Amino acid sequence: EAVRVEGPEGDRWLLPRGSPVYGEGGGVVGATVLLQDVTRLRRFDELKNDLVATVAHEFRTPLTSLRMAIHLCLEEVAGPITEKQADLLSAAREDCERLQGIVDDLLDLSRLQAGRLVLEVREVSTEAVLEAALAPHRGAAEERGVRLASEQEPELERVEADPERLQLVLSNLVANAVRHTSHGGEVVVRARRDGERVRFEVADTGEGIAPEHQQRVFEKFYRVPGGTTGGAGLGLSIAQEIVQAHGGEMGLSSQPGVGSTFWFTLPQVEVPRPS
Ligand code: ADP
Image 1 (cartoon, rainbow, N blue to C red):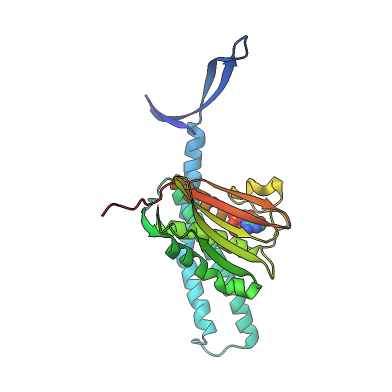
Image 2 (image 1 turned 180 degrees about the vertical axis):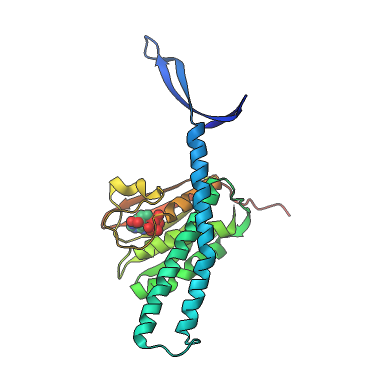
């Protein structure tokens, strides 16, 4: 992590790198520290973020009117349409929705990276969050013949989190799990206490992820080569940023052909207050 220092010509960002110095006996007797000035890189990053955010923002309004126009045509408000035309318009509507999803992802990500995402942390019912995260995917799961279930430790009633963001994280993971699991498979969402933390897991019996891709799936725009699903490769990086903004961690374990489990922890659990 780069650190900010005040300089005569404004703030500078320095990235420390250190290595230990060993004595004759093999023990550590000191350290060398190198400070790399990464101010220009940092400014470039900010510029890139701003550009992405501006472009994404500018896409939103025209996308909304496009969707509205397509909707009105499909509803035959502008006159009758043929079946073939309806098919084409439906395909256009799906693409609009996909694009809108990507635009929303980009906006979320740029806000997160600019540190401008203000979390509204409060006590949240775990059950309600799990239910809200699962609900939008029940249809898709049923269509694909995938069983969708949640398991929750009984005494784990509430967590401290930004409910909307937490729901987004879970919802992203569930969407991925359902998408990558084939007929007859299962997706289970779990929440349980893990020391001072709450641990959430989304486990699937899907295609799994090969070891060489496992860490890379959290990178921005990274998609496992040869995959067929539609996203832009942003969902997991957003989820990880949100979890880290809460002070938590995120990871996965996966075995190709067997399934994947994505997990994350949140640091605080509500302790029952004496009444
Ligand atoms: P996308 O929007 O493209 O799905 P994500 O960041 O959510 O982007 O995921 C990155 C990549 O990780 C996906 O392209 C997919 O190949 C892989 N992936 C994510 N979740 C799973 C899963 N549950 N099972 C198998 N592969 C997955």
